[in-house]
Image (cartoon, rainbow, N blue to C red):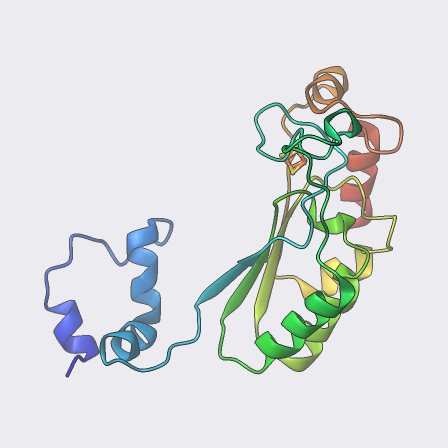
Length: 192
Ligand code: SF4
């Protein structure tokens, strides 16, 4: 039978204080580790979910930077899939009944491109104690009016801004007037 004491006596080569070390992080959830080693059914500590494979930017360093472009239509690379409303809301309902501690909304592509994201985030916030965070390029927060939802329902949001110079940012990400540096900066201001 495993116990927290027994696990901590293993002289694990990890520092409890280094919370950004992935190996240490699990020590903040020792109850789950103990249950896991005792063959119990353990709910996840964190669930990472991609609601969209599509993106409105084309970053050259990203796996999703090109798979959504029209010029690749008809090739095996092309993928502009989006999680359907039914699947996304079923996920929201199911996970809200679990002891999952946190959800990271991410990509894939750009999570805010999914029109049903707002309903899913709000449902989980209202029906569970799960904490949520989101990785986004921040350019589409107006389209589905996400400002209030993201500020009220998320614990953290990370908006990717690779350059402080508009010209460089727009060139790198292949933007247009609806999703460029200026738009992202305005959106960041609106979240304050
Ligand atoms: S904005 Fe994000 S998902 Fe979109 S192409 Fe750039 S890195 Fe990839």
